[in-house]
Amino acid sequence: MTPIAFICPNLSENCLGRTLLLAQLAADNSVVRMVGPQLGSNIWAPATTAGIPIDALRIKGTWELPRASRWLRQRLRGHRVVVTKPLATSLGLTVAAGVRPSEMLLDNDDWELGLHASHGASGMGGRLAAFAKPKAFNTWVSTWAIERTLGRFQNVTVSSEFLQERFGGTILPHVRDTDVLNPDRVSTPAAKHKLGLDDRVWVGFVGTPRSHKGVEDLVDAIASLRDASAPGLLLAGADPTDQFAERLLPDLRARLPRERLAILPPFPFNELVNVLSAVDIVCLPSRDEPGARGQMPAKLFDAMAMGRGLIVTTVNGMPDVLGGAGLVVNPGDVAGLRGALERLSKDGDLRRDLGMRARQRAVDRYSFRAGRAILNPKLARLSGVFCP
Image 1: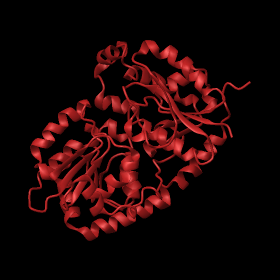
Image 2: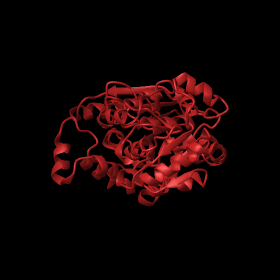
Image 3: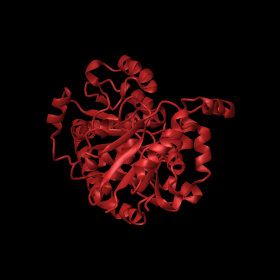
Image 4: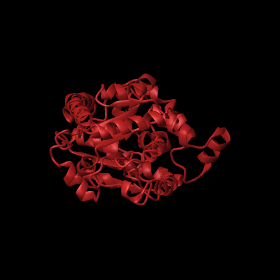
């Protein structure tokens, strides 16, 4: 069987999560590895214990991209090629290495220009200035230019209906291994004890905090609950050196008493079962802005598989994925979010009922079995590149 190389735009950040998912789906009947540039000092921590080989090239500036494309060409020889994200450091490098659009599978799980609209430089002057910086890789300008070429790619998967409407392709959701992510593996009291949490109801936000994900709305809502039964907040996956986290964490510590707040840095995937078992409610309060509209949170599927009580907003198709197995509020509605948190934290029977329904929906629709049924026919179209 021809091996498969899964190309990630940055092995140092959470974009590696989608690359890892695709590699895990293919690993049941193929030799796989993840390949790409490492733009930070370390490989993204959650992937380091996943058991999929990682082949990284550390690069520090755009002047190294020609060397990176030559390095990538050598790594891809004789491999089938899957590229995650239409970015300069993944799709751009792969095309520069000589792989034609017809020879690859392109996977897109975010609207990258939407993320730039939420977090990037504003105005054409600011965008051009960012593009000119020698250490700026995936800028608005390069991303815009690459997005204009996506009509040339026919073997495409996307993670949501929003992206399918925009770019075409076949929807491959953020499926999960529902045998591994199983609430029967760890009891909630044992998981709380392991993380040093007390026996109150805990609300979890798991993943990289960003403003478009509505973390500040969650903080506002949970800080306004002050009675004796008020839930705690577990922020799991926050890198304290990240610029957004550097602003968020001091405010969070000032507004919540110590006994109602727990913060975990990025953790390996093999700890995810314990982290999710420790929380009673998972909240994904995405805001209605460009960065959120095209981004289906992978953590929604984690929480569903683990049978957690869920609260989501009406953004990016989350209510459709959840299918009634959770509470839904409007984006930016802090009062509505507070009400949903209060209701779910005080009604254990409702939490358990919604959690069981979410778990069953994950098993039926968003398991590895379902994902492989979508991905394998796409992989079957590929052959090894640069072969004699």
